[in-house]
Image (cartoon, rainbow, N blue to C red; front, side, top):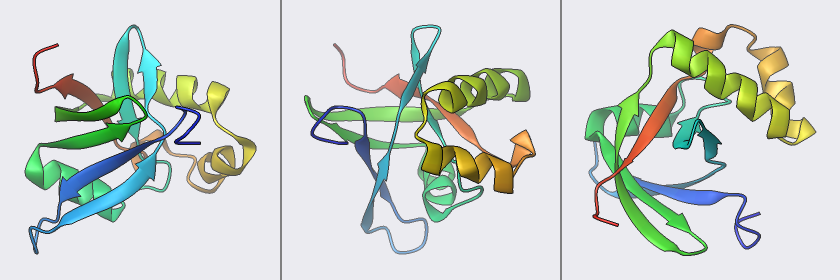
Length: 115
């Protein structure tokens, strides 16, 4: 999925260790903005991203440093709806297991590097 450009790697420093952790994620675009959504609830990458405030997305086109803004519930709900439309079945099952939208933190990606 990364070679096809559908997924990216998130690199973010660990909140305790400071060492870089890498996680494969599927960024989504909503209203011309990019978002990261946790389909698995309050995972380690969510906690690390909250702590660091940003990280690096490794995409097919190269790395992009960014700042992360955790979104409010109404914006998060739009991100979840978009993600459910486009996500593979195996990922959509996670929403059935954790049906409360508050269990799925979402972050808006704000580029840290000038275009």
